[in-house]
Length: 421
Image 1 (cartoon, rainbow, N blue to C red):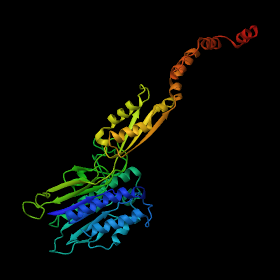
Image 2 (cartoon, rainbow, N blue to C red):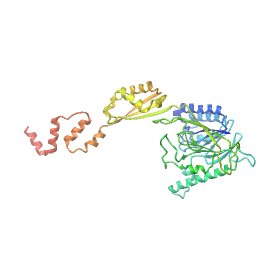
Image 3 (cartoon, rainbow, N blue to C red):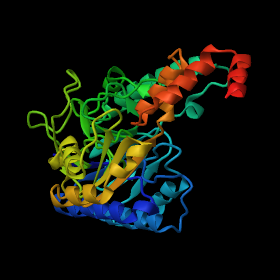
Image 4 (cartoon, rainbow, N blue to C red):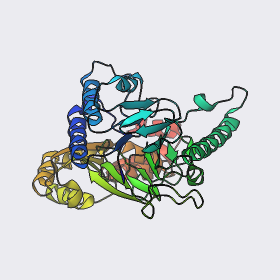
């Protein structure tokens, strides 16, 4: 059996230093208990490529990975270019019991008794595992300068297929598990429980392409929702909640155990049978971030108590418990005073057990509605009456009479009437 700890999408930054460190320390403690043979990190270690090497987040990352490398060899791929920068490359110079390997380009690694090499040790010496390392594919990396943008996308897709097939062929020469560690978008992956990724935003890899690698275990980063996208292929997701969501998902990492086939620690070359994998998702102690968008436009006004209870029901008490809650309430400008922020916050904390609550009224000027409805009315009196209705007011008959005169008589007749008064 080969045990693999799989994590990704740390996105370390000073703003969330405490939250990131808390979740990473939980991963370290699990690693000490589980004693994995290999630790793979599938990219996006840092949240910004512009982070300074002497920032406390960078120093914390160095310390955490040093602790992980005291437990098992660590294989890291560079993630999205706007996130991971040169700070991640420094990890390969860390001094610990086991090595940390950082891949900036696609390459194959060979693990022998806790050491990592980028070449086989020689004939007759079988590695403990082979790892296909694939950082974020970029157009710059694959691009043919003579090709246009559309042709480039196609060429990148073809290049990825050839890459997977090549790694699969090379790994099949060794009687050991083949692991893919990669950072990219796979077609059909989900960003929430019900929403699939939009295509065409990033360079996308299909499941058919991935099958060409013939890998026993595929460990991915980039998508922040933990999921199994196909047999033995996983996104570990973010290690902490990074954005407010209507329904927060679980955050954490995976422990994968690659088993033998029929008692033999090898892959059947004749039938290409993959080794069975048992995977466990382990949650990190991340703070939940929950948001609610309440639209009160055109609805009957609610009392302070009723509004707070309404919001509690809209979010769901299970989602609120121990969460940081952000509430956006869309309301007309003259109804803002009906929003009792303190009452809402107290209700969600006391009745929903929220950790903290932040209420943001989104003010909609009534003029936006007036301009749409009033323009469709033909007469000036009708327009005045509609304006009054929107402001919950009435127009005196004398005003309506004067409006009728202004609209139906010439200015000479109006001046004449004024002179006769």
